Length: 179
Image (cartoon, rainbow, N blue to C red; front, side):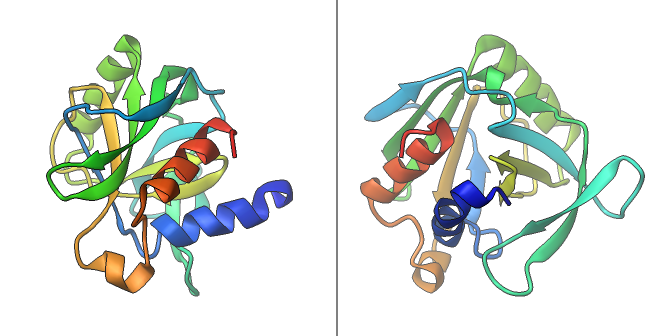
């Protein structure tokens, strides 16, 4: 973990990744505030999670608790920050929870649709600044070009998760280096 961002990463990780409390879904935009991309490629990455280690994977730790889950993450980047057009915080009107939307460029939208289609029932790692933010199982192709990060119902009480818009906006700042 990058030491200069250690406390920020810890705070964001505690908010969002307590044993995979985030959900990855497509959504309908209703943005309130945000920052235009693209992001540097290394800041935001989507990579496949493999069932076992191979020469193509690296071990990465996921979770803010001890012991953290060890994931075997493929070294190949499937999507990166250069495909991000806009990052914003909003209220998810379906679940009435704060959310962060990552809106992709047209090219990113095409790539992400293909990636999610090819990884149905498999995990993808969403990596922000070198740390796994979430690692959901893909349940369907996401073709609208929007990645929504929210906290699951019920788990929010265990983790104290992203309960306020201010916390969602902090994640936007962390993604866009504007803390």
